[in-house]
Every structure is written in C-alpha cells, then in structure tokens.
Image (tube, rainbow, N blue to C red; front, side, top):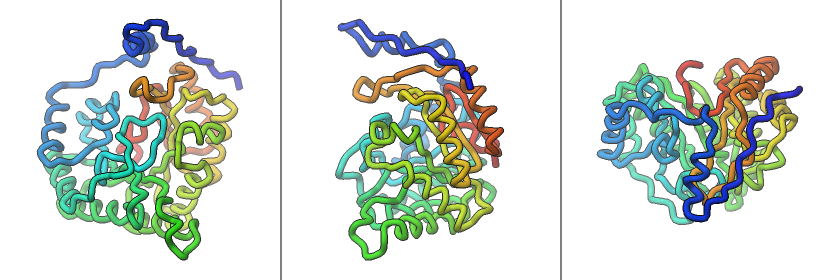
Length: 315
C-alpha cells in the first residue's frame, strides 16, 4: 500500500527562537482558528469557578472551540498532575498528585448541566498512587452526572489501571480486569483506551505503559460486556511506518475495538518529543479507508483529530 508520505519536519536552525521557527514550519492543513471567544470563555469560566479541569484546556486541544460549540467536552478527573511521564503529553507530571476533591463528581455534574452538554467524555490523569487506579472515581462521577443530566451520554477514556498492582495478592492481570470491570459495570456509552502509537515506539512515547497491556483493556471490556462499544486511537508522526500503523489497526480489531481515531502528533513544547513527520490529509484519508475495510464501525482520521473529536456523533 503506497500511502502519501507526508512532509518531513524541517530542521530548526534559529538559535534565537527555535520554538517560533518550529511553529512557522507547520503545514497549512494544521493551521486553524481556535474558535469563537464567547464559546471558549463560557466553558473556561465555569470550569475555573468550580476548580475542575478539562483535557481540552490542559492539553491545549486545537478543536476545543468547535467541540464546545457542538455541546461536547472532555473532563479531566482526579487533578491535573499525572503519575506517568509520557513524552508526548502536555499534562503536568509528578510523583505527588493532588488529593482527590470529594466534591469533584458533583462539580462536573453541575458543569454538564450549566453547559447543556449532550455528550460528555470523562478521562483522567494516570493515578498509580490510588488503590484502584481511580476506577471507582469514574463511576462516582458518572453517577453524579446522571442524577442531574439523565439524557446526557457518557463516554470514558481511561488509563490502563495497572498502578499499584504489585502490592496485592491477586495476579496483575486479574486486578487490571477487576478495575476495568468496575467502570464497565457503570455502563458507559463507549469505553476508550488509546494505544497512542505502534508497538515499536511504545517505550519511547508512552513511558510506563505497554502495548499488550493496553490491548488487554479493550479485550476485558468486550469480555465483560460485549454490547459496549470500544475505541482507541493513535497519534501519528513519531516515526512509525505505514506497515506498522496497519499492523496496529489489525491488533486493535483482534482485541475487539470498534471505533478508531487517527490524528497528527503536535509537539506541545521543546521539552517534548519532536515531530518526525507530518502526515498529509490524503494519507489520513487512505488510512480511514483501510480502517473501515478492517471492520471498524466508526473512524475519525485527520491531522487535527483527537480522541474525543466529534465523539458524540458515533453514539
């Protein structure tokens, strides 16, 4: 399969402002307006007043204005500090994450009500310090949302629930499955867990995560409740090949994954991994067709696609 090769990232030569040079080198298809100021300010005001977080803001998502206008948002649970140190992610990292706010589930539910959201995605930082990795916190937040917003559909985007597993008598795989089951039994509209990149690049891109461990999350969901749609995604541009991407799509389908997102990795800062290649819109279109041929029932593939982009449309 001869996909469009994309554009290799140009080498930065400016010693005065390398970040500006890198931004100016972005292909035209990665430049877009951020959205209406009124829609951004409304959401920002509500989440700041309640001291809660969205991955839309913490991750500086380029689509947040569009999503806010379509009445969707992705809430970041359990604080803004992650116990993992993935080399691609904008979210803050640290070994001392914030204590859980006992009012967070209710604050999120109230925000959903005030914003009139029809479809909500709940994600979180990795909380390897918590006894269940935060699985029960997802459930508490889902219950709070449903009490105030019974017609709002809820998608979850969880970590792999592997943290702290060495401190228990059960086998690691059993504990991971129990934590996934806790969330599945709350009956989300979709269960999302991202593999993020191809097998070869996992160690470089996703420190603390493993490829098979992520596939296990998707397998567990289907084993527990095969009626719940599962979803995963990749960020392209870390140096993966077309063959490796297709291999990953096959692995996801073999794990029972129903839905897929493919987007372009954009470096959040000079401290993060550099972009190895910008994939063209044509290449994303061709990968979309391949994914559909493999049996994915809903595919979003494009340079600015992110995990929750147009998430409600597949509901």
